[in-house]
Amino acid sequence: MGDVVKDLAAGTVGGAANLFVGHPFDTIKVKLQSQPAPAPGQLPKYAGAIDAVKQTVAAEGPRGLYKGMGAPLATVAAFNALLFSVRGQMEALLRSEPGVPLTVKQQCIAGVGAGVAVSFLACPTELIKCRLQAQSSLAEAAAASGVAVPKGPIEVAKHVVRDAGARGLFKGLVPTLAREVPGNAVIFGVYEAVKQYLAGGPDTSSLGRGSQIIAGGLAGAAFWLSVYPTDVVKSVIQVDDYRNPRYSGSLDAVRKILAADGVKGLYKGFGPAMARSVPANAATFVAYEITRSALG
Image (cartoon, rainbow, N blue to C red):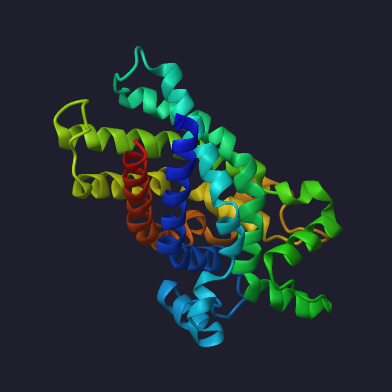
């Protein structure tokens, strides 16, 4: 079995593990990021992460926490095929000779290449996911204009294409690139750095699952710490109305978020994102490592 196929299979398993563990946290993150600014004298729709969980479960049941998972789950194979196979091919190019471990700097470079590749698949996938996750907010705006809110991934995609053409599916590509490129450099670099620290050197082949869990969890936390504001910008742009957009672009979104909420506005939903990052990315890397090892 070729390395690319092995990376595809292992990456798919790792991506599925990430989704099942982390999606409820992601749903709450997007709800907090995309809730509309309250009118003067009014309270926001959600008082915080716990309140968002309570309202979601009360209105939609526990299944509401997994809303929008269909789109990323359907594309998890392709997404992780790109992420891990591009990273693997970058590793092969950067490696001085077969079998030699990469340095932390080289892992960061490999992560940059993987980040560029996956952005073009992540953007339309996350646009559909975010619009489903933020459905309660969108429903209120739609009700005011008499427009029905689409109910599933396919219907969301059809509505987007109807309103903005196929390129509408790539709304938010710039902040997606701004998140994925540096974010993947950080996540793979930190993962390798922590493994080498725990192993006491560049050879990390003897590390146990516990060490991989620690390295994966810390790498995931580092990802969100480094790029979270760009994720907020991406989310608000992707759930924005196509016909009467509130934001003209990424910079305009940043300016309006800062004007309305200050710097803290760029960190809406940060708590759920960080709470998700450790277990979800630990699950991703451990599942990947187990599967990759089993495939030889």
